[in-house]
Length: 165
Image (cartoon, rainbow, N blue to C red):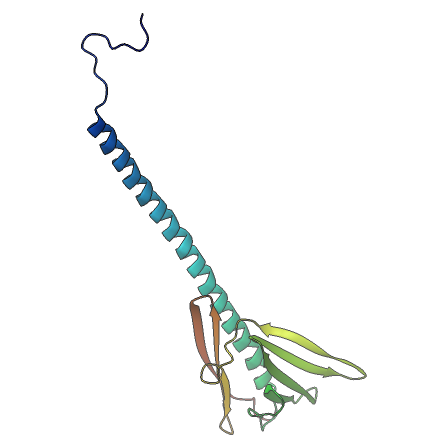
């Protein structure tokens, strides 16, 4: 058996056949790469969207719970960088919400100690057209927007303090 020689009737690949195979392999590889990139991109967008929704829902839940326990009037235009000030009836304490660099913070004083500061939500848009509180004398309208990556979620909550609060 001789190595490197073609037997009678055997033929090798022509240059055109090799170029066609390489081109087809390139097209298939490009299609697979594009599909994988789209899947990862969709997963990232979905995760960002779910984070934004979760943050908005949590902010709405916590603020709504405090408003239900609040004693009117509710201060939606406090000074000093505060976002919302509520006086809770049962405990007779003033709870302050502050929007600081995309983080909604809840501060509650403690007798004889440092106040308790809780992170309510993150990724909150500080633009006053997107996140704001409006008090009409009986109902607090709380609009909150969270933005994560290119995804954002806005919710509007309308909460009325309980009578007699």
